[in-house]
Image 1 (cartoon, rainbow, N blue to C red):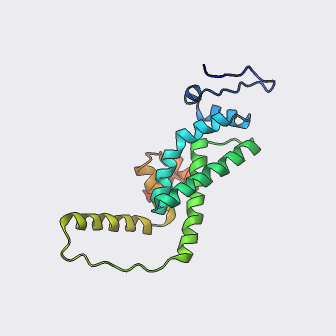
Image 2: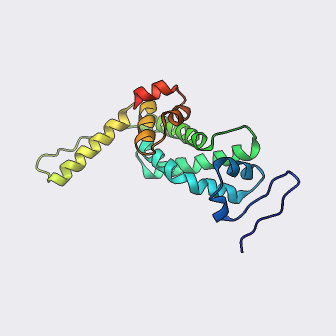
Length: 180
């Protein structure tokens, strides 16, 4: 049997059932986290970490760096949620934290970047050539300005609305339309 505590003096119930928490809206989960319910934060993580990981992976081009960025995103988010009662739109807020973490990582990597040597492709099989074309496409995407890359990834891979992307990227909706 799953535990649900009785109403507390603060006027809310602290729900611990993962299945029940999974049905809560983001707003209700935030309220639960702010009441000290760690199980609610686990539900927030379960709901959003895959999308944020995909976003970070596309922004950073590295699974390992993306996983680090996701971990830092959720550590930062938890600290802010329990210490603040400011109103937030959870999904956009989490992606904004992730975007900022990715930008910090990219700045750090840019300072340490070294020139890559081009590998000749003459005589390689079609499969290798296709892989090379994919790498070039990914390199082109990686070379886009960060706001355009973020908007493109969020629109195409996360299927977010222009308004949600504008909030995450920190620009006007009309600019998002021109970026994607």
